[in-house]
Length: 309
Ligand code: ATP
Image 1 (tube, rainbow, N blue to C red):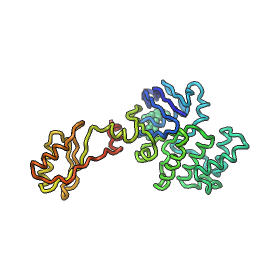
Image 2 (spheres, helix red, strand yellow):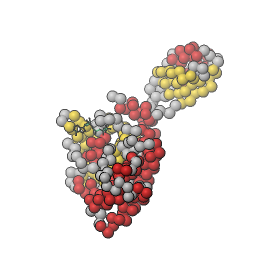
Image 3 (cartoon, rainbow, N blue to C red):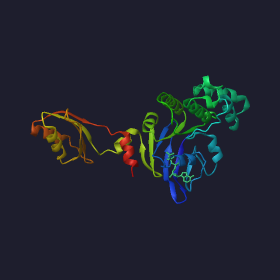
Image 4 (tube, rainbow, N blue to C red):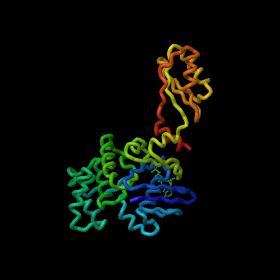
């Protein structure tokens, strides 16, 4: 089920929490929605899930507008909110029964559906325990189970691995990927590794506006135009090499990575390359150039660059 967000704006007083935001998500796609604190992620998700109405713009889920039939849209959406609120005094199985009834799943089908979802979410061994007795990872699984019980076509997850240990994180990510094969999934996070490991596509929002949209590879490329190279030069004086590298016309910045090994990181000015100049410099000075390796831009750098202002 496709989601089409069309120029939505949501204001709180005079502040625009979301400012003319548009994007699409296709069936079977896992979209990572990334942004720093206060960027507008939750507000956007609340608009898609019909918990709030934007001041301007529209959202269509499966072709239905949030303005026309929000109740129909809600039927097709499973939502795990940031703090994963659950009735913690209830045993897992009773809680899921209660949620299934809320979704009007026919009584004769509830038992089978619960068993199916318990199996999918890997909570078979915990189903008779009170939710409060479960570890955070298992509580998160119960959150996913309640969001999936009515077999929604769209799944929205806000910070699904917050507070989990590394093993639990890997398990929940695997589970999301498994679920994501058949559904449209939006995963909100400010954890870059999470989004990169789980999502097909990444959208970055900053101060209510979309600042990037693409695969992690696309985003790295988008922010490029800037060459960073690791350089090792032997048979010369480290300070002399440093100064000579800095004096090259296209070089913006030189960092010494290791004085002993004469290893540097050289950043070129935007849209330029320093590789040939470095090679010529070494020939002229009779230094031995033993390494000249381009460094890939990290997604962290892209994120910082796009959200620092
Ligand atoms: P976080 O990662 O911290 O959860 P977020 O990206 O989800 O942040 P939002 O919760 O959407 O950001 O908030 C966007 C902006 O809107 C923030 O400046 C926030 O203070 C403001 N905001 C959100 N909800 C309300 C509200 N109910 N009343 C007033 N301002 C709000």
